[in-house]
Length: 517
Image 1 (cartoon, helix red, strand yellow):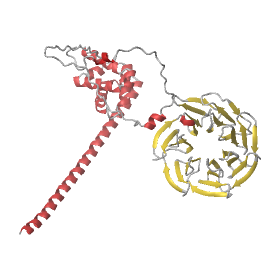
Image 2 (image 1 turned 180 degrees about the vertical axis):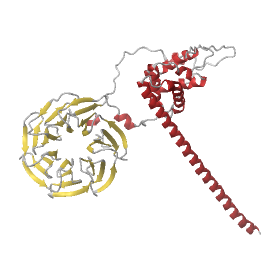
Image 3 (image 1 turned 90 degrees about the vertical axis):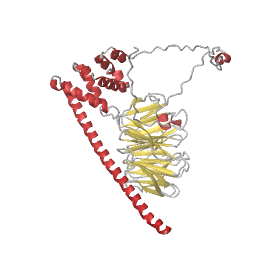
Image 4 (image 1 turned 45 degrees about the vertical axis):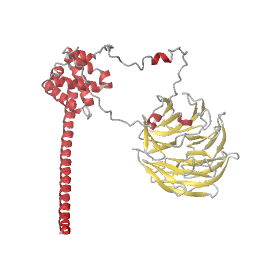
């Protein structure tokens, strides 16, 4: 062992997502709990008051879930047709819902039968919300109208007919009981004032509007439709920023509890998190199906996403692990630790170092005993290939340096050669491994080319590997050509700078000569 030097495992920089405070914050959720609903989940809304239950609208039912329950604690199903939306009142005691038959119903959370029914829309109601005074309800429907209802009298107060297409989203101001916003498939977002009986602001989104959101301060408005999320200044009616980070239609919007992060869900199965100061994407969630609805609980403790396949994905924030108080043991006194700290070595003292025993890895033991094929087999185990591929690449590099890589790769059966081919196919395109693995791939092709056709499984992987090698070589050739062109440009620029410097000095020299004469 004294004459053997262990293989140095080269470390490579891991190319991946940059770790930020947002990454740590939004990744701090447990594994999602999936709940199957009866149909596509069109709306999710959290109660603003403890215990922060949430209402899920799917098919012809509205389920009320506890924040940590996987079964509904209450169900409202007295609808003639499909229910599209349900929203809690600010005190969490009432729930208003809209359905496909044009009805708007008001429920008490403690009961099951509707307290009030508002009849007036002739087509499906897709948006309902309570005004800031808690005594009025705003609704928008596919009959192009927006209506304001009075809860105590169950009567219609106002009707707005300014939209020219389906009204699919809306929200009421949390500060002013007379203001509310609606978005329509006519590409417009309108703000209505109950005191003027007409819209006081209208902006053109440019796409059918799927969702609107008001900031808590009331000064900013967010609209989504198509692939765009747009932020508007309410006072000036001007567009502040237009975001295009999704690949498909953006269907829902949500604000974090602090108001510093904006979330958007889309049919491209992603939820994007934006900073409300820079409006840049700071995090992203991936889901299994297209997203229709999105909601965040108080203090962002729970994130609920409803999808088109009827799956409700619920993520709960991880709780900080509480350490159990252990009985306090009596520890040595402070003087025990500082004893001999300032001792100075004397001339006659003899320093004795405790020998440290070094243990070789299993692949190092095989290499030490010249078992090269077995060493390669050890680093091709699934645990090593997946978790530490750099170890496998380092062993391949060491075998190539010794000139025995061809011997280690030769003489393998179908199962063994498949493991080698799988590793090469998986990692050949990575720039950090490419120089070593291209050489190994060429050696395998040279060794096993005469026996191609004996195994269909190996043949398929062999052809795939050969294509990857050719493609990688073409990439490197193009890269060398690009580097050559850049070298020529840099050389030309250097030559021009030197010539201009010479001309400048030659012009200045005669002037100095004249002045001396």
